[in-house]
Image (cartoon, rainbow, N blue to C red):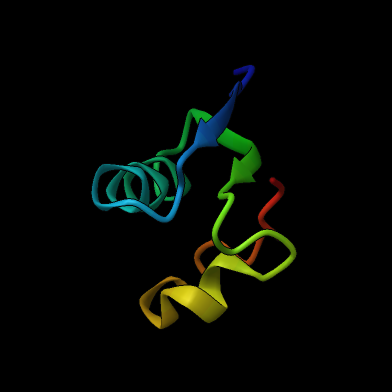
Length: 61
């Protein structure tokens, strides 16, 4: 089955990080981009350690 590719804008906000967590564990979703102006260039798992090994993508601006 083909996965749905998603990008999350505002991934370090309250709703954004919950969306990252839910979609990272969803079998039919593939996170292709995460963005955050405040944490651009950092890994989302460095900002939210509970996402370590779940989503280690680098945040774009």
